[in-house]
Length: 338
Image 1 (cartoon, rainbow, N blue to C red):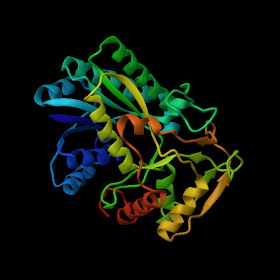
Image 2 (spheres, one colour):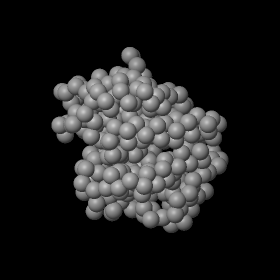
Image 3 (cartoon, rainbow, N blue to C red):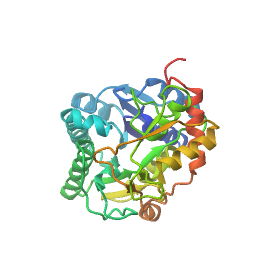
């Protein structure tokens, strides 16, 4: 039986494909390379010592999806394929709704037609908006502050309605906090398109001289050092969370959301200091104005995921930074040839 992984060549998808292969699963990847590289899948197979199947294509292509389900013995789907930049989503919202929402609906329609009802969805802590308190529980009110977050919440709503309409569906909504790090081998990691949207790859690009300095957006938040606090978790821990979710959806039906985070918040300057310690590199940074929509503090209460999925983040901040530096220093151009 095969696991279909949409967006499997991307940052989180590639790490999850590796964990799936190492767990003995057969993997079929569908990816259109909007945010990814085929080289990542080559390296995943090298690391696993096992091959996966790969098809280049788009989740909005219903005919392609129908052929994948008819030609492969697919038992479950892990869905990563989506546009993911908050800032970009405010500039091209229609693209985000088309890809992230319409694409997911098309995928779910193809799954239903093929009688495949096990679904793990890559959601986000952005669905909590600006929480009134931390740590954040799955039961908190849901709201969003940008089109990217709205697409995640809309898909969650679709999944909840779908599970309520048909008891055969088994859906896990995984609300990620802030993935960081890379595989300890240094062979796969995060390759941003253009200027990084996430903190850690920006820091690592400053370290190798690709960026002059890190912009720290605001130092007047109500946090210990005035900079924003977030819950950073190692991408390998996050990938393992998907294996745990797949086990869960194989045993129960319905639609359930899980926070995947560490339960610990680190400020921007905490992250800079941790990276400097891991790399031995000084990171230049400038304090600039707050960004609209940014919140002061956001970190998870991950106890539900531990109780229900048997999952807990294990890797430390030091490991996260050491692995990030190893990936960046060994692959200055990402997956492109040096």
